[in-house]
Image (tube, rainbow, N blue to C red; front, side, top):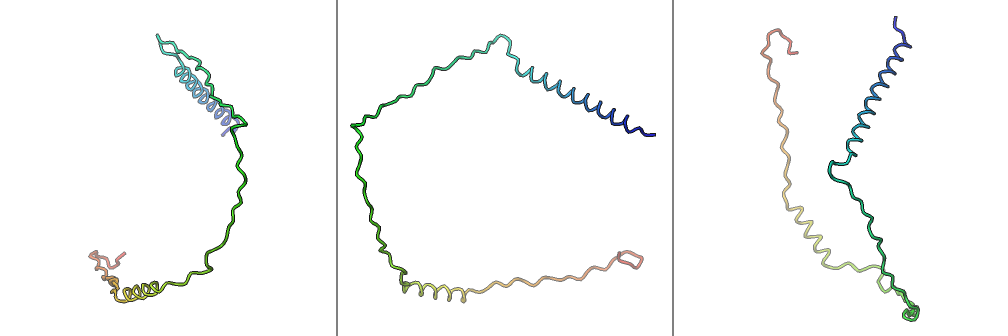
Amino acid sequence: MFDLRRFWLATSVFVLIIGGVIAAVGAAFSAFISMPTKGHQQVVTQPAPIQAAVVPIQAAVVKEAPPVELERTDTTPAALPPSPSSSVHRKRATKTAVATPQIAAPKPLIVPERKSTRRGGSSD
């Protein structure tokens, strides 16, 4: 008979072995990548600190401007009257649309099915 405990024990051992092999290969690859090259030493130098040029602001040089009040008035009309040329353009566009011939789509072509050449009477 099939032993369920033995199956899960074998499956877990198999997964652990495969996981260990993958981890070992990953660790070896990581060690190989991080190895220094032969004959060349890696030299790391500390960069010099960057000092920002700070210019002190003198209080006597800065002068404050007096506050300015802005007056806002609404001078636009509520609605602009329609221009007489807009109705002319609208009429001309309507006449052009009526005068343009419309392209009619062709009717679909319906072709009867061919007769079957098989012998036996049924077409299926």
